[in-house]
Amino acid sequence: MKTHKDLDVWKDSIELVIIIYNATKAFPKEELYGITNRMRRAAVSVPTNISEGSARNYPVEVIRFLKISQGSLSEFETLLLISLRLNYLDEIIYKRIEGSIFKINAQLCGLIKSVQKKLPPSAT
Image 1 (cartoon, rainbow, N blue to C red):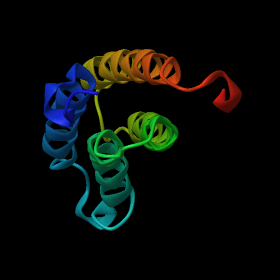
Image 2 (tube, rainbow, N blue to C red):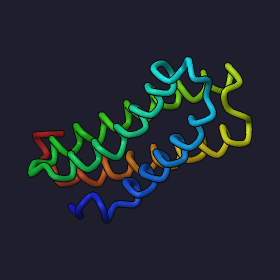
Image 3 (cartoon, helix red, strand yellow):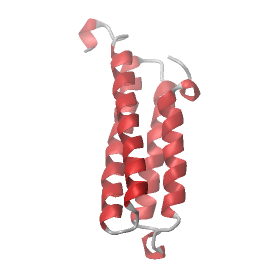
Image 4 (cartoon, helix red, strand yellow):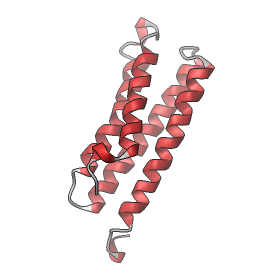
């Protein structure tokens, strides 16, 4: 497997983190330790788990960390929707981020399938 820095999904998820850090700067100050913190942590969890998984020697472990990234992405998506409904985000930014989430999830699915092909038949 390539290093995490070579993976488009890692690069795209880093960009997502930057976007969300900038977007959450405008959130209400009382949300700093609430939704702002949770959104940032969920977003950061995506590329960090991709990088941790890519450093593993066994495909099963790689897949486990990629699936953790998917879970974090799903959590992030939920927090994004809550932020929209609370009017912390405008519709344009929401749609842009939602598109990134869709793309990153598709990339994660593809990477998981690719790594699964390296597993022996008994491990699938």
